[in-house]
Image 1 (cartoon, each protein chain N blue to C red):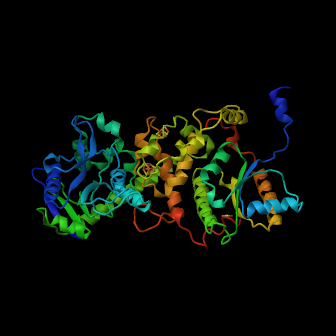
Image 2: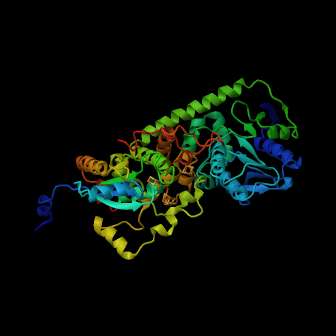
Image 3: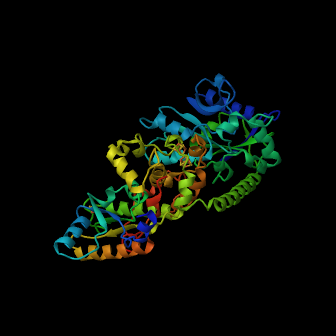
Length: 373
Length: 149
Ligand code: SF4
Ligand code: SF4
Ligand code: FES
């Protein structure tokens, strides 16, 4: 790993990152970049695919994850790998999701240059758009993060509040914010050969001691782990059929959660398929069995069924929860289920692209008690 | 007769069990139990499938949420699957399903996977005895009364 420093002038952190990205794009080594950028209204930011360096005005620190770049890279590379290098600025959960999609043959990493950025957390889209504080969300984030990061918790999405790891792994380049005074300098780490070659094209200063960064990373990871355990304790009560029925009773079967989920890739979801179309008499028979039937039907079946299909790849990004029009706090259930299921198979989604997803492999002599007793 | 009276005269609990049996082994095993006139409780409703590996967890959940008191999946013994490794994959899916049911406290004890070969008519009957007794002990599936799922 090569560590360098990116100088920040006049405390303009975003300006410095833009400068860095612009130099990369102008170097001709990258054909384009995918970065979050403010929409003309300035109310939201979305990932954009930029090819003209002059049009690059990235908002890499804006606390908003409108869509997962993992799904976007999948769209662009599923059929054919990118012909020329494209840089993609990604948060850690997006990288994890992309690796899962690669394993699922839904994306190709060739010519995708992952530029990871330390994540300071994101707000729900609606909170971001109608931010109640006087400052803009990004200014507020940066100020609070420095002063008292815990104060951010009231706005952070729960997925971010208890994030498994906000530090990118498996990136070619990482822009480090933890363990440095970002108003003076940002840490630039190059991991892969491609990353190392690319940073040669940017004006950077030599990095020094990384001890401070290591300490800061340990600190944030510990902090998140504590909050995560607290969260799991708090949500332990949402169990059993009574509680689960109540938890999902405002679900309207729109399946937006699945649509927003980066790892739910199926072209036609089983739960949207004709499997669920049936003659009236079948619905009537179901109604007769229980006396009546909530319509639309099968909301809980959809959620628990979806878990059975994808929970081992769930990167806990919380985009499902953000997408729900009825504000069902899906992470309250998905985080505990993902934790337990992934533990059962000793599997960490997004950790290693060469590791196989547990449901497509098996060993002959495993789980012997299942099937015998 | 009022509803209450009807309740009081309730029959003893007879569990409804939905069984997915693979064509090549367990279904043949069940058939053998029948043709050999081995007695076993009539609680299972058998659905023949081509392989235990073809039973998506969604179908098991569907049966449970609709109120089945138990769901049984039967496949060939490890190494004997007609499609080579369908049962190994079914086993991993069952581990996942039971893990999820456990986390959600949705009575994973109602879902069983067993290996029964075409010649094991007796084992099929024994397993049905065992499962019916276990589910009777668990009592009726509370989901049977939930119209709000
Ligand atoms: S289920 Fe939700 S938290 Fe998990 S990967 Fe999908 S969108 Fe993210
Ligand atoms: S987005 Fe919300 S309402 Fe729509 S299917 Fe998912 S949980 Fe239900
Ligand atoms: S054919 Fe019997 S388990 Fe596959």
